[in-house]
Length: 465
Image 1 (cartoon, helix red, strand yellow):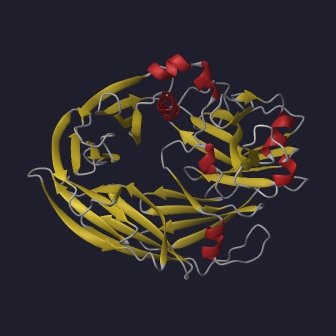
Image 2 (spheres, one colour):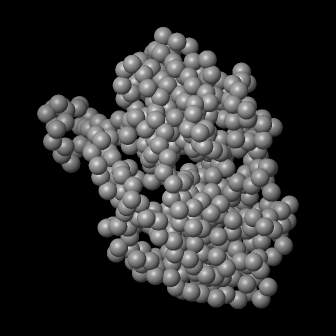
Image 3 (cartoon, helix red, strand yellow):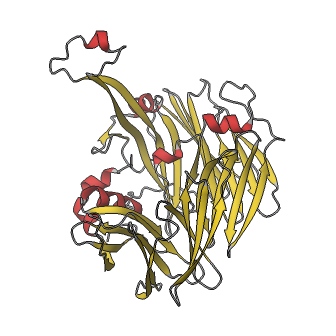
């Protein structure tokens, strides 16, 4: 579920048209949908932009300069990777890309380096120990490709770093540390992660509410990882992981406390600060702590009879992808919030910090296919083929706009590039295989257009254009 903000409904025309087509490329394929996989990438050293377009039988590589003019293109076969999934990329020092093709059946990744100058390639097969380890996540950073795995028996994370055709294996040992679940019972690291799966936060991008409500979050930084665990209601357990010397430092940040025990709590790490939120049906506590000192920089306490002074939007509730509705007061907001998984998201652009505070939840009910709904109460506990489970996703939230010095403002929340992109996708049926690339000043949406049979790159920026 994508969170779509209120201004998307209020300013629909502005949002839909505040984007620019940068370039398009025709796709010829026997496949009805044209493409099977798409990946956009930026070489962070040269700032060239790439589009990797895979059909069922071929791969097209388009290389654009920083102004998005097409410089080079090659079309090659999908030999060695016909039945594999494209999961990532890296760039060598010579500027040529390497793509990573994954197969769960073969328990391997095929690395193929593509030489654009003469349209040749070189393949290498890398076995993945899926019998002993579970795939945690993968990502790109500084032109390298990272693969993280958790161990099924050892209390550890293994990082594989692919760089210039070589791979380094980094074993991150968490056995010296103590972990406790929500009930304060001691448990091993891998069991804590099994109960609270890690969600990777996208560095430098807006992370929507449904992602930041995860109790375990991983933040990817250059040669460094930040892992936060919030399964406990009373504290955030943070691990600062150095990928060069394998040093792991533990820090503990106590959640803000109130007279009545919190029902929900969570945190978000952003630029050497930890944003913590805890709530029950009567009170919301929000605390910003310095990473090094652990001391509180800003603290807010809001009761159900108060007005939230630092909000820059109405208090909103959204069901599925419908238009959000406004909640009438703080008490109603806290009542709804207490039944959700709560979280806070922090995003910075060139002007401000944008915060979203709220929670997400799922309502499940058994629905009868009988038009008369006869005997619903009887069958509710014993679903039959004539009954099915209906899940409704909902979220409650408000938005806050701050200066970079952590000063609250009265500014209206202008749409971010990510908001516009999600709205564009939701309103265009011809968009297939969307892929988002965040650059320094704007974001690019790449997608296959089912009507024109072209691969299109569109530019989106923050704010009203």
